Amino acid sequence: MQTDPATGPVDGLVIALDIGGTKIAGALVDAEGRIRVRAQRPTPAREADETVMRAVEDVLADLAASSLWEAAGAVGIGSAGPVDAYRGTVSPVNVPGWRDFPLVERVRRATDGRPVTLVGDGVAMTAAEHWLGAARGHDNALCLVVSTGVGGGLVLGGRVHPGPTGNAGHIGHIVVDMDGEPCACGGRGCVEGIASGPHLARRALENGWRPGPDGDASAAAVAVAAHAGDPVALASFERAAQALAAGIAATAALVEIDIAVVGGGVAGAGEILFAPLRRSLGTYATLSFVRNLTVVPALTGTDAGLLGAAAAASCTDGGGAWPGRAS
Image (cartoon, rainbow, N blue to C red; front, side):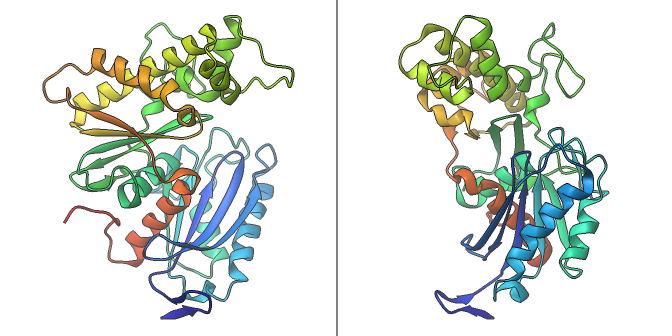
């Protein structure tokens, strides 16, 4: 067992990567979910595929400089999607240079042949929340990331359910408005096209909300205005909450979840989002077996991607079972 001079013995260490359109984060994570070493680079999202990969390699090189690197037994990746865990490729909507990019093979090479497990970022967040967060102890759960996009993942029968390609539970592309606007996925009327941060802010602007003197037109700025009582900002959060509630209710009817955990930047608005979300859920989730569904904020915060990636790696390195599984 490796020993950290500062904190003592280190058990079950794995390498975790959290890859999104804004940042590429990496960490060495132990079996208790403690992050021992961190590294991060901005994502050169609009650059060529190899430029993006160099940023990943730079993060891994920073981690490799640690004395704990050699003790890490496997690698987990939570990536913006779509991902294809079966083929080991990624095609993130927000990283145009990566289309069917062979990320698993490239990371395996960069980490001296260590086993690599790939999941979508929504599944990673779900694994983190089931292991250490608000879904802990729940056998059937939906976890959502509501941010620049809307992603999600499922816990079914006490285990994280990534699906064959690592994308199961992608609630952002459930259709909730049959006549809705086109979505970046190629569909129409998706949850993401209504509830994601950029679309929520766009709706507020289109309906007459105006940014303050600093010109900030983000969803976070709309949230500030909503907390101050701005009716247009409040209506934008109400609409986003309705879309999320419809998607959550549809998921609950399909697979009988008992809790929905909501994280991501938009969820940081607090009760401005959660109050109308719970009200709308009462309208959509009416069947007897979904009526008691609860909605709660996520607990793992900005580390959710790294912790979930570590959980995925532990499946490879620790006997094939996700941490946090039901006994």
